[in-house]
Amino acid sequence: MKRITLFMSIAGLFAMVILLPFSAVQADGHCEFAEDSIKIGGLVPLSAPGAVFGGVAMSWTANRAADDINADCGVEIDGVNYQVEIVIGDSEGSPERGQAVVERFILEDEVHAVTGVYHSAVGLATMGMLDENGIPTVFSEPWNDNVSANGIMEYDQ
Image (tube, rainbow, N blue to C red):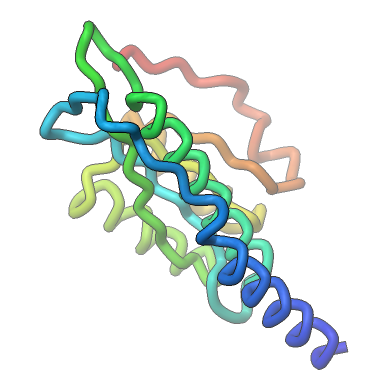
């Protein structure tokens, strides 16, 4: 089973590297961007014991989405265009490591939002810290009902 998982991870990574040049999107030069960017933290498992293939796919997808948004002049706020920047952090599928990455996102990277979180345990361990700091969060994969039990938080930022 481990050999199959390793093979699938390597094959998936190889396929993404091969296809990457064909998926890159560039702004056509008509966009003027603000000096600052909108930073979105991607909390994903990129190394064992986490679900590495899922983390690689989530990271790749977030970066492609940012490329598409930036190619269309980014995000306009009050008439100013901002580029979207994805800041990836490896949770390793570990709650403790996830907390350390979120702390880095907040204190060093100064992200405006966080997405990702493949493992419920990582989501449960990080959601309090994110909420306390007013960081809007979209968890895409956790199955534990307690991740969404508190309802939708509203942020005025």
